[in-house]
Length: 394
Ligand SMILES: *Cc1c(COP(=O)(O)O)cnc(C)c1O
Image (cartoon, rainbow, N blue to C red; front, side, top):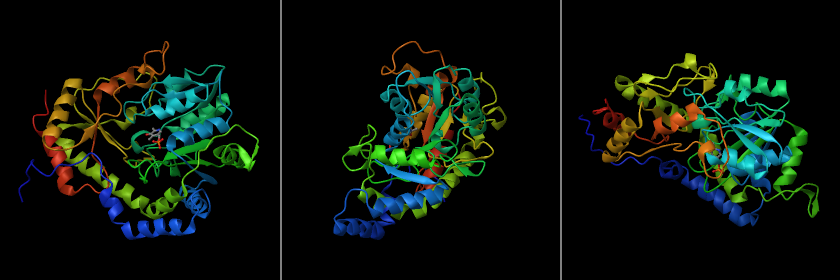
């Protein structure tokens, strides 16, 4: 067999094959909801919440309208608002910090670790003030943040912990599901996430009975009883139809994650000749971490952090090397994406004086995510590393 670099185009992400495999069951679930005539909450949402709580080992799981709303609901349930500061990474999707700001609280941007890409606990520690009320770590690209020091920091300073697990459903930290270690876990079912839904959807988990009850009320306009409003809430409900469809896919989540893990291993093997693996010994090791690299770096699974590989993200030594790689992938019909091109403390929607955050800033020039979705064929995977291996030096 000869391997041609002129293979079929490889989209960055494609959900069609995954859903096609479940078409009869998905249609049956749709029909069930159609026949029931119930489209808001009800048994389908309740059943899905129970399945999710069991899968995650969480006491409470609350279906919500999106990952963004899961974050907002968590912050609202904790009564965070004007005058409060919430620590979060500067290198993440906008929703993380946007949700904080929407409550009136102030997102305090922290630097991240260049090995695992997550909130650096040492940098977070030095940004704590008398106004700090919570830490919002993100489990970026499908891998857990360094939770032990973050939880210790929270205990020492009496801070709440909200985990942004939007990209990392199924990821674990020392054997425990991400999102069940802090006060709240916020998950997303946006189609590109590990459990890809049919539109928007999300989930909020907690092990605290009082917080769960309050969050359930805020999800429906702050009412425990219809038209009696104890809190100022909103409409954060997960659609009944969405819950029914997600229930069909949930039993397959572990196999999707396993495929992602295998694809990551194939990428690593294919790229090994032209790259170095990141050094796990330096992961989250100190406050000031070096951003300089001299060759292509492959992402790694830091020991103790079961990685779900929502993204497979390379680091290039310089923007020019990254551009050349993007061009080569494009010429070979392979998708790739930059998550994220601008750090959040440099976004126009967060004006004001923010300190320099060297790692977050450097990463925006270095990172490139390759296609890794579960249904990628072996030929497509191979095509990606072959395309990157050509003239990658310089
Ligand atoms: C996708 C994502 C969200 C938001 O999820 P939605 O369901 O799209 O609202 C929040 N945080 C991170 C890190 C994400 O990747």
